[in-house]
Length: 213
Image 1 (cartoon, rainbow, N blue to C red):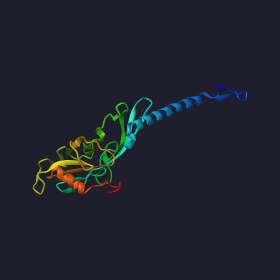
Image 2: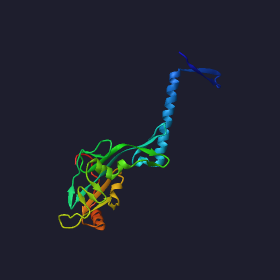
Image 3: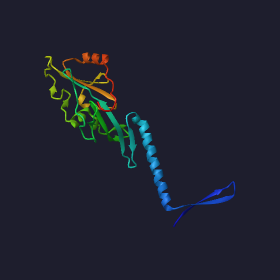
Image 4: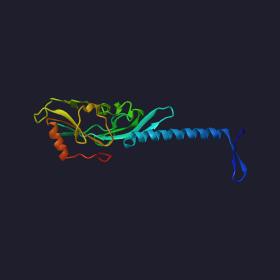
């Protein structure tokens, strides 16, 4: 077997030591050093970006970076004053989907990440619209579950779609990017924004415990 010899002088004792290392071990050591460098770089990118708050960023030695997370968003829906249950166990596991919990959206995967811009390259899988598409439920900025702005509720009033996240009104519901532990309340009724905001303030909805609902 061929060995590489490394000679080190111990000046204080006047001795010379020879260390032998096989080529295979040198290759393994080299690969370990590369791996350690990749991990350190990934950690630097992660902490600089602040992604540890909602996910983890990993950068490969090829230069590609990915943002990985497990997101849960609670989405209570009320249509003309009646609670609406979203379907369970719907949607591909590689995209937004539901499990057994009541009105809880799940997403757990990885997305390409730009470390220079410090942002996810394509956020479409995280859009609220993508979630409703995944569970095959009609949803837009102006309607949900077959009810559209202007349709009459049983009480006689014209309904319209309004959405609130954490109690705050959100325009353009289709394009909302879901975040972990979001409470996304969707209403379709005749009430105006201010009235709904006041109702949410007086009756806050907490994020539910995970599990059967």
